[in-house]
Image (cartoon, rainbow, N blue to C red; front, side):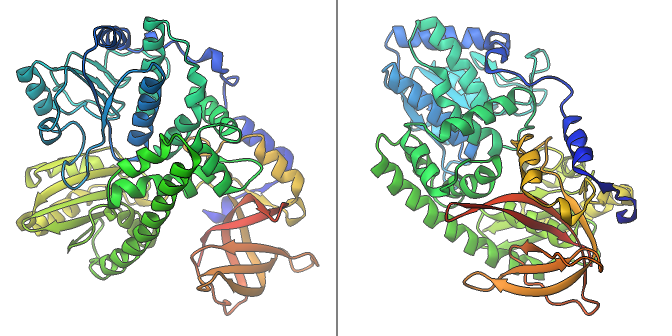
Length: 530
């Protein structure tokens, strides 16, 4: 595979990146009308009517970044009307996911609106019907054949929906709907003010950064630099950069927002997003920082234990542990996929029930594999690359055996990780001009990945370990023997020892490094080919 990688000039790279976008960039004014979303106008009229008639309105969100962002946008919008809104984000451990019957037990209301959940809330819809509560579901997940019996459902994935761009997250659905509510009530609310939070949701929920998503993220990141929202001021100060990128959000901010729902309660993240002053926002952000550190420790310990339970011969890793934290099993599954280059399912055992997460690799649909063995499960859901599931502890061994039997039918090439290497750059081309070229095509993310380059059989000149715990490597290399110039590669979370042949072959990406107001080029190792 690596032998086929071609030499690349800056002009080649520009052409390669330009070809990713077959149409001109969508302007904010060209984002499709929210009224084109099926049932959105009906939902907006119902919400407007409830406000005009002083009805009690309750919002039910979700504990991930998209769910918290959706809830925050709704809370902020209602605050500006102003109109009282009861906002609930279910607790992962006490309530489970979405608008569940346990959440409904503590709600007294006339209208419930869900954001980023509800498409599978069939039992909850029945409870609402019995209690005379109108239920508006707004979601973006793929529906099954049976839909909840709600007042209406707004979801671009409904088969009959014809919204021009359907790969949108829960926060986008909520934002588009609020645009229609604004129109119904003839409110003077600027919908652009929510783009900073909307950008975080789009990036964190791994939506494709093309079409309207690309525009919203671009504009949202720009807004974050000068927004008066206390949460955005704190994010801007924390990142301390002249430009915030989608990767800053994906790797620095999203894990912190997520850690609240994973380890404790997502209300901590919601209070950060909706804080009315920077003092409150800072306090909540400090809590998120602490939870994120705890999440990292918990995840590292669980990963260590999980690795000891892996059956070397299995095509699909299935591991389970008593007391493993339910909030980190998804991340642990991703770590196992990275380490063993196979799909992984990590289960947390609590009494007689095991609940967990699955992550996949290459072209293997983990969802289809799980579905094939659903008779052994209590519940499951998800998509090709990630899924969640629950089963009786007594069925774990049988499930492991069955899913591995199913996996035997999958061709070996489907298990090959999809690392797209753009080409080989000459070390002379690793300069600020290259950085400028790459910046033209930001934001990078899903469907517009940051280009990855190959360094092949380069001479290792020296290796230095960095960080307080010496867990990162700074590798000085010379690309070709005749060159005097050396370049530095950085391998985060990897201690690299001098290879016996003093050679390295690796893939890397090029990033901007800002330190003490100085801007430099940083080469980040993605993968070392041993």
